[in-house]
Image 1 (cartoon, rainbow, N blue to C red):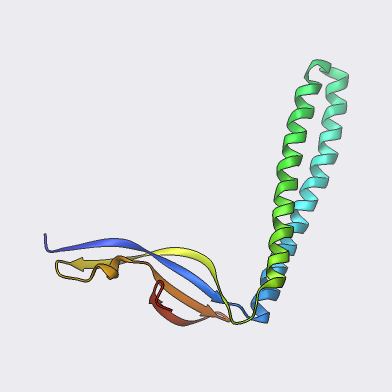
Image 2 (image 1 turned 90 degrees about the vertical axis):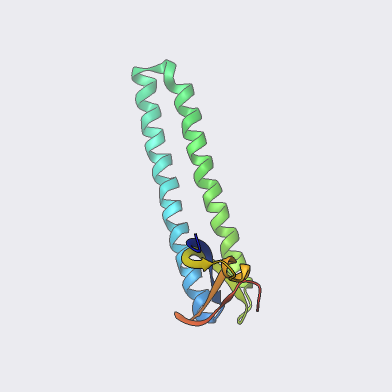
Length: 139
């Protein structure tokens, strides 16, 4: 076998601009709003379910309270994480590059090729346009 096609990671980086910060902050605020609504709904539905259980199945109230508390805790942790991310967005310096995500690409390698061809590739995006494609760690 002289050739083989393999996958390699492609790291997507974004150059921080004021527009990027505004867009990211808006996404986080929307997620935060949805999480707040979920918490309110969970609180309302939980109270209603607990009242029903107290009437018809009093033995199940303790377990239901525990499940409700666990669900609320999960949502509150998500909420706290979103608040922390929002604070980090405010601190981002324009011009810096931040990792936005990762994809994979196919690359064909052959006997005698440089090993570096299998290393990660970075695609740098600024304001929605690709401004650079480079081997990871080269700049």
